[in-house]
Length: 261
Image 1 (cartoon, one colour):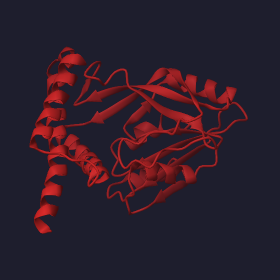
Image 2 (image 1 turned 120 degrees about the vertical axis):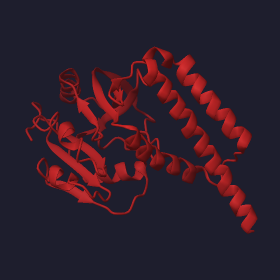
Image 3 (image 1 turned 180 degrees about the vertical axis):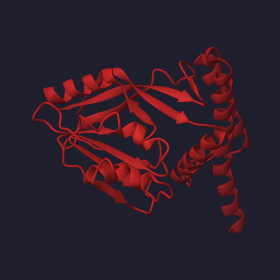
């Protein structure tokens, strides 16, 4: 790792599990210009740890899983830099984005967080519509000013009192390698979504069908998914299926509790 050109320090925060395929590709895009890389592993069984330790000595393993928000908070607790850049293993920082990040950190504003526009690839195709692009995510902020919230899934940076500004350049996101990869990732997300809402949100068969259909129509028609060709249709259909599953899971949990009373 090589430090950035200003006196202000910048670190990368990552949470991973079984990311051996993507990890080096991500870290290669930041290793030469950040001051610190913090990686939190939640029980990888592949070569993720060996790869991570080639880039940093700040590798920590926690075999429990508290949820995405709390896990990102853990990573930040190990950080020491003024600014943090949050990345996932399946993301790549482009040269244009690198220049924008370095400029933002060098100016060292207070009360500001920066959002980055992701460009995602699914099943080997770049997705330009389907509600996937533009895809602005807050990923760069001062470590002493904010952190991620406590959400188990779809976690977000707390922005109360902060101004959010966009950065130039794109963050490349290689989201799904294949259908089996999609199933593995979404299964974890769906369970976390239901865990977070169980006992607080009601659902039924009609609710599940309605939300599923709405998900497909929004993604494929309103968000112009049809312009992404066959991949757009596949993603919309998979989204419909996932939406149905999470609402039915919520209903089934309530139904089984009532039967057991």
